[in-house]
Amino acid sequence: MSRDGRGPADRPILSGGMGGAFRGVGAVLALAVTVAGCQRRDADSSSQGSAPASEARPPEVAALPRDGITMADRATWRTHLPWPDDCEDAFRASHAGDAGGITFASLGRGVSLVEVTCAAGSYQPSARRFKLIEDAGSARSVPLSFPVYSSENGRDLSLSQETEVWGESAVNEAAAEIVILTLARQTADCGVWTRYSLAGDQPTLLAAAARVQCPPAPGPAAGLSGSGPPAGWTAFTRKD
Image 1 (spheres, rainbow, N blue to C red):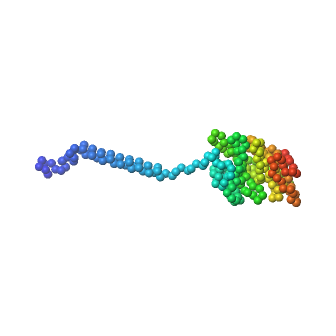
Image 2: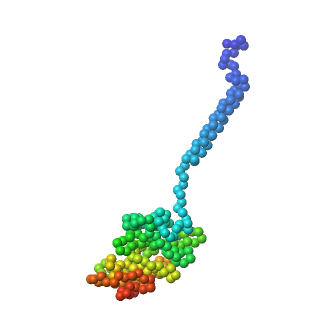
Image 3: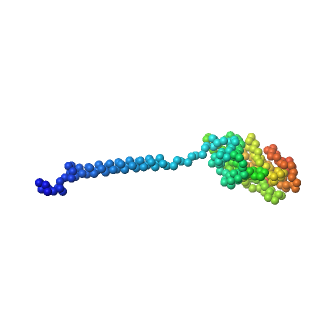
């Protein structure tokens, strides 16, 4: 005990009394809050810096090549033209070299026909076709569906709508028309010749001719012509 009769519990804790003690504790708490805030900001900055980069956008359509398409070009074009896996698988299984199997034809201002080869085939390819419409920096593609004549029995023709069509093609850009010659066998002496208009949203059948029954002995091979069907093939009108 001190000489004035007070023990240690009776003395002020700090020279400033209880108010000084609270001010000291408050300063410590404020410092702790400031440090914690800095740590959170540092953590946020670190997490933002380590965030994965956004996926790269595919190149714009206007920047893509239209001639001499390679396999790499084909992969890029597929991000804009939605041909299915079975078409792509057939192409990769049957093609040779680095040619990308895509051709373009102009159908007028800002409109193109795009032919995408699927299977190479033993004597004729199959293809899917799109109308590519470009306007004021934007682009959209329209998958095309064709009315197609075929014969399963070599006698009768039937009509169906097809998005993948077999045969060689020739495009008349000025008239916005396409001719497709679909052969029934490798000797190219029978099959179906069809001409379509591409002026509308979807292809319209304009003319057709066929040699449905293949001759017992191979005959003259038919050549693809946009002006008319092969010689000796029978023209017919559409019958749905």
